[in-house]
Length: 321
Image (tube, rainbow, N blue to C red; front, top):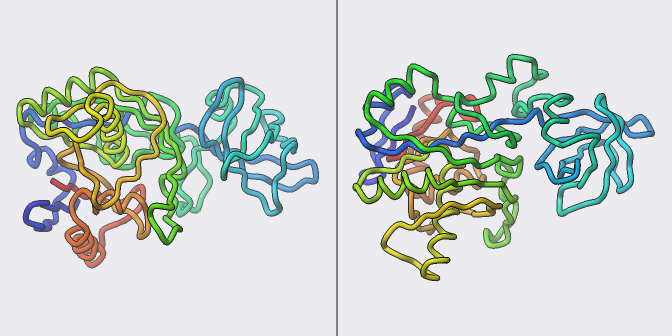
């Protein structure tokens, strides 16, 4: 694990097992409790051509939004045969397709789909991935990718963190495939984030407000937690005052977020971040640069590359405090 001090810019090589000693008693650690759905399913066109059906988000009445990948264009009205029955292609919605399934989306994909392992893992998913690609605290179904910072935690580490006297809280952000898409627009104002479903409940808000009132840190485990907390805080701030406020504000909220955090963003809630290493031109790297400064982050990344740190979902961690 790489440690980056935001005040000094100092970079230190540490290990994830050192995390408890880098946290102070009373700090609030916020985690994402989303659970990955078996979101990948293969189907066949009437012509015999194969189509990959990748769930993006469930809708009502056995419908869903999905990515459809095939060697030839997919069209509205197409019937796709799958192991679980026929999937009807209803129409296009931006860069996704609305489809009708034989049953409720989450149940259907969990029964007939495969765990959507990252594309750089060149093997088919097997039964062990149902657990290995989930965090210890995954409980709310809906993500199509794991909140990867959470994968660093095992039960002994959690026990040591609890023994350190930390508080914990949970939010839910169902990770969508769009999270990992590179920014292709020349002007960042033209980049449109995919909508992702968020739920920040009253217990999480109360824990944040207690920590802030006591001068304790809010530690986000993963960029998804930052986006969930900062989205809820922005909405609460606008509802309360219609503008910026020095006092932290956050209230229970559920909905879709398209929050694009980039340099210049004012963080309202989060004081420290545990995250993995992200790819160039990604919104995730821009978020990290917004949090700790572009030059310190890029300098830390150069150190990580030289030191042989691993990138991607099963890679190493970075703690920014």
